[in-house]
Length: 203
Image (cartoon, rainbow, N blue to C red; front, side, top):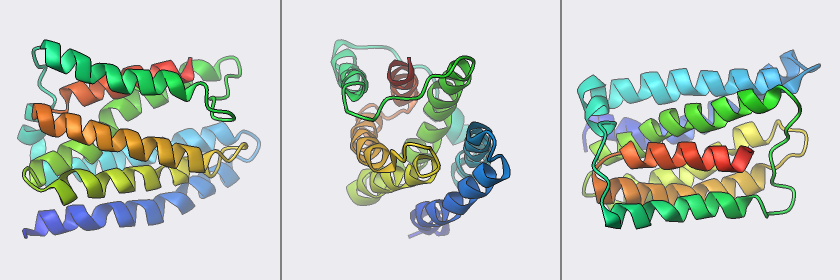
């Protein structure tokens, strides 16, 4: 096992351990408006872990290869319907809807749809697809389990404390997106589905 593979295995554990106190710090710092702290926590996560971390682990050329647009086939079209249906069903789970106060809806759309759609797929699907191409355990199962665990950090600082639902739903979706990335050999489709799914869940 290479050093980068070992680092990729350890990275989710360290990420979750550090991001929980970081989210709590930001939310305490902006206690009058917890949403600012929540957004700062996400930006910190995107830049350090998803952006810089992915770049250090797999490099620029691999990232560009992973996000290169792909041709839509009928098989992929039907595979893409599953996460979209899941995002739609999420809206019917009690106490799992996103809060939508006035101007925050626009920021929520940008943060959860575009930001998470790109950065999370780069880290949680792209890195593991590249570093563990033939390994089901570390290519799909391990990152999917930790993808669910990571959602405790942002979920635990929200007023309605919806962390458990976020963790379970995200873990399940992570498994499916990991399968989709492995099946197609790209994260182009997972970025698209994560972005559209986030939009469906928030609006």
